[in-house]
Image (cartoon, rainbow, N blue to C red):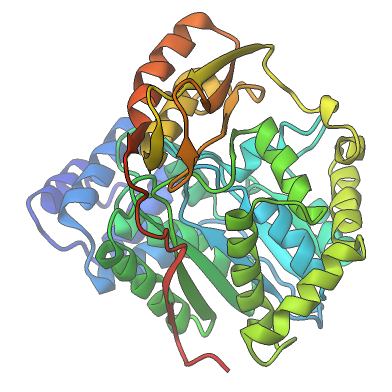
Length: 444
């Protein structure tokens, strides 16, 4: 049990009213909540106060440090190879990590990746991976380290002992409307990543309707915050801004996003998804010292894919984590809802809107995400986007194919999907995918 030297009610009230919390108070809150002495409803109130009142730099440093040291911290000093991780702030159809990590690992980068579950309307890497039959994302510390030593990467969630405070707060944020806080996003990401004992981190900061950061101004503030936290811990952090006004790739769901990730590893992925993977992978290879600049990384990643080494690496990790690697050659082993609904275009023209937020929320309504903390995920539901921004469409042509298991859920989802697409007489301007970057030092 933690001591009662502070009152959580007083701390909530102080932050609610715009006050500044001390380092000792913040460390006590994290310790008490991790120990179970502060209930979810009171932590929820504090998180909401932080969302509205924010944390100043000193508060954020103390909050992050407390979360970072709420449990074990990895020691990867025995690994000579460069250790670089990647993290996304979350988007719709964002399955980047699933194919990115095997590619960069096949190039010689060690990636001790700790991933998360879906937050709000955005999908989670762990939920997607668990649609692979038998795949385990809950690894012991021994299994985690063995995966890194044997394969150069793991794709796992937080263990019970690694940054436990973040694991608890992360789940709570998803169901309390406190996901969009810059302080909470930055501290969640950086506490997990710094606990991995990495040399560098590449951040994919999503911007647009389907992202938590709707504008580049918001995204830049978040990126600068995380780059600053990295600098304070002597860890090189690079942030790349990528667009999230429409889904990334064509698939939105869990099992179907695994299938699309396999397409990438076979060299047949959609152009936008592949472009983001290669940009982020390039940054990781430069951070690792395996290339002098981004131009020099393309051939390395191409060779990892065309040689089959990246796909082989993924197969080995699937097997090591209890999964059935036959999914790589037999997509029928992936879950797929039996019912199909076709969303069709109401008129001729060009797609001028393919709203990621509406599509992401619709996927949650289908059962592909969580509306409550303990909701089960239906890995077989989701949708395939047939028409995206700028593409020509004719009346009655398919906009999206929706896979569902429950008719009521479908009705709730289609209400959103029918407004997600807009069709105009003229094509929109070009869709810019890479929107900028923030880094500690100029690119080499």
